[in-house]
Amino acid sequence: MAIEGRHESHGGRIRLGMVGGGNDAFIGGVHRIASRLDDKFVLVAGALSSTPEKARESGEVLGLAPDRIYDDFKQMAIREARLKNGIEAVSIVTPNHVHLAAAREFLKRGIHVICDKPLTSTLPDAKKLVKAAEASEALFILTHNYTGYPMIRQAREMIANGDLGKIRVVQAEYAQDWLTTAQDFKQAEWRTDPARAGAGGSTGDIGTHAFNLASFVTGLELESLAADLQAFVEGREVDDNAHVMLRFKGGARGMLWSSQVAPGNENGLRLRIYGEKGGLEWAQEDPNYLWHSPFEEPKRLITRQGAGAGSAAERMSRIPPGHPEGYLEGFANIYGEAAAAILAARDGKKPPADVIYPDVYDGLKGVQFIDACVRSSARNAAWVSLG
Image (cartoon, rainbow, N blue to C red; front, side, top):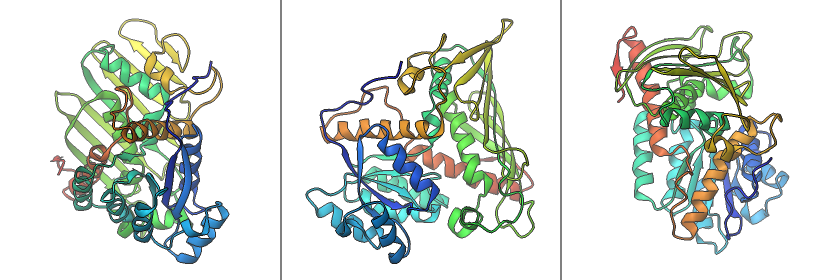
């Protein structure tokens, strides 16, 4: 059965603003849908584009009141902080290089920030954003949406319970094919520009997802890495393929492959983890299933709400067994966790212990991962530690 009353609170819906994510932007639409699925947020304000004309047009299409449509995020932060019914939280869904400046304006005014990944486009900016978050009473949530999938929570719970024993091997990969050629379209235009996306291409765009997921599920901390990055498409200034060797504290070893030039792969995010007592396998394109292979026992299929699934998976599940549940629902689960934390903060309380979301420190680790990959590859795949 569907889970009823998820993240219930006596408080009203959270007043939400958005920076970036105009009405024709894919990721902006995803965030808006995700924020609405549990009816915990209501979008009331926005600075939806870098150009005033586009920002106005987008705000009108989305039905925002004219006086809550802003030309820029600073103007929005200043005015919304003064309004009695001003926004309580803001979603930042801009290109990476804008994250620091935008987040800082809202954090210093006590407005909670929900930010798309990666945290920033450079490591110095990431460290500045950590300081800004630490100096603020507001919450900072990073939308690594795949951490909201039920079977990812199931895998995390099983590893924490010791079902796999000591972890030995971690294999993470994220393969796509949409940048196989030098096509000229909006998403590729900024994601392959180091001035806006950062020094990492596939490593920053999708490699950080794979790295975050490996860390989130296993609880392991990366010690060092050796990366070999390539830009296969002629003239491309950032990597479109990466092979990364990983050494974790405690002795576990891993490999990570991220590629956006792998024909036949649409959104091939996969995770395989092996320990002393068994292994787990999960694939994002078939997300309701988790394979568990206890050593010297038959392989077992765990389904989202079937036999073998635990409380962590159940809490993230939304619809009856057998119905597909994936990207939008996983994204909404992050917004659900954010809502629980924000509503608790509204009441001067801490959220329930099982409320989990990626934070600014997870974001810092992701940017450190990108930075280390670039440094390592520049040194012929030398082993480097995270900066």
